[in-house]
Length: 554
Ligand code: F6P
Figure 1 (spheres, rainbow, N blue to C red):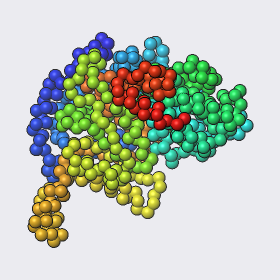
Figure 2 (cartoon, rainbow, N blue to C red; figure 1 turned 180 degrees about the horizontal axis):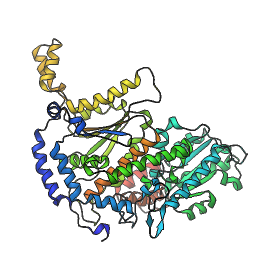
Figure 3 (tube, rainbow, N blue to C red; figure 1 turned 180 degrees about the vertical axis):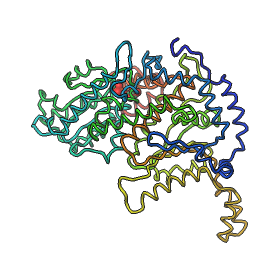
Figure 4 (cartoon, rainbow, N blue to C red; figure 1 turned 120 degrees about the vertical axis):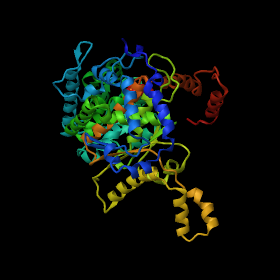
């Protein structure tokens, strides 16, 4: 039976109904009390896997909650869904595609057939091709048109052809190999292009045009601008091949663009863009940190794949995190999820997860096309701690929304500076604790009285000082950020997103919603530039087009 034909209305499952009833009983649940009553709560609700410690004890859960959530996963056929994902079934039913990003981190010697072809040798051939390029560039053998070695690599790509590679190469900056600087050019905004090229020399710059489709407007415009820039600064046309390579599953389009066939690194339609950092789309990562570290990254992700496929559901990190998300999104009305990395090097993690989660699970119909009548993917937002504490944490603590938060923090810093890291870690833990613990009216009043305030002032201020607490959060602790545990961390969230999609019965691997804006963009562009006289179909768009045309100067 095709994947999408399976009947699947999660809300009709007995566990869903039972969770609804259980939720009503959990209204009075207090995490504070749960911790006070159970000294083992941390050890019962925490898990150590693949270099990651997950503490999920500060959640609105008891044993029954976990048991019912696991039951939900079982009734929804999660184990079968995981097997289908890893076996290469067409889990992306609207595009008739498998989603085999896991094959990209599979060690040589394993076998995985898709349409009668073993994918693993292909994957490793490309890995070897990447190794060759990285070696040539790092050793100075790859030379530009004036025979100088490459010093700067610019990845031109957007979405999945940008966010994952940027996250990883920045997160692993302490592992950077000397000699090559990596830059990212994503947006069509000319300011980004100008600012970047101002610090580059065409003689020593290599551009990677990174686009699965080789049809993405922003990437193609930037690639053309880069080519013009290279030519304008004296780069000879017949030596362009020394400065432009491509990663794509559409080699014909890359060749037509002017990239030499031998400079094209393949990727495959069975890898989704937002899951592609493990493929040749990860070239800028490998160039930044070296191929050995890139392989460590793959190995870390593979370890998480092994854990995900083999661990029982109740001890399975991605499964537990996914189920907690479902618990809050579908039973507590949470609309968003905060991702709060307490590490400078992980500052792009939230951005990557925004695409990974929101482009995957921002769906409102099931695989079979029927509309869902429950919430699916949450809004993912957040940013680096401690900065967020002095900005948006106020809303996490006292706002009216319930916003589950994931804290991510390493035990060790690569850059010890006095006691800064101890303070950073302490801040991370205390935020997590404050969200759970809160401050009662009695505590607030006592605090004010202890400051010597008169009773009228105590009563006036106390309501503002009350912090509800009972706000759920996970803590993910790494020893230090290294290629292996970073690989595991990224794979953990990939699988979390998949588990949720499988339980909701939606397709995590297409993204039709982004197409309409692209289509309409062509008409708007033609009207802005006077190529089309016919007015836009609505007065707002036309009014804004007129505004632009009246004021735009060149
Ligand atoms: O427009 C969305 C999207 O298709 C993403 O899914 C993808 O990661 C991004 O654009 C870039 O696509 P490509 O790698 O084909 O240029």
